[in-house]
Image 1 (cartoon, rainbow, N blue to C red):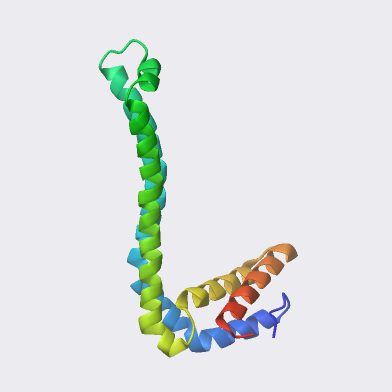
Image 2 (image 1 turned 135 degrees about the vertical axis):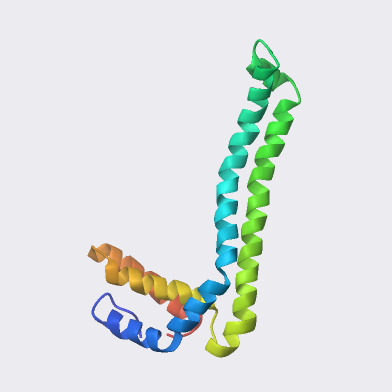
Length: 158
């Protein structure tokens, strides 16, 4: 059964609420630390790139180099900057991957035997059902219905 952008949303949501709402909330509470790690990692990417570029320029400006851009391009600061940018992209990505792995591990060990599906997919399904209810336009409602159908098929409910 496909989720249409018509009135079946309330029926689907009611069916979801009865069985899984508490489990999804409990899963969210248990994995909140991993969500925070993902958010901090995403912000660290931006901050690391800025620090990698501005740090050497500020250093050369503070020691009295007449043209810090020339010293930056000619010296080892260029390599430090490139290394810093690469590290700023890779290290936070590793944090995000670790958080994602731990969330799936919690889902696989604790919730999958009870629900039979991955809690991450179930959470996304619920999110799109809620966004479908709050959608202001038909196009937005159809987009969330399509995404809800995707997660429904992914979980094997269709």
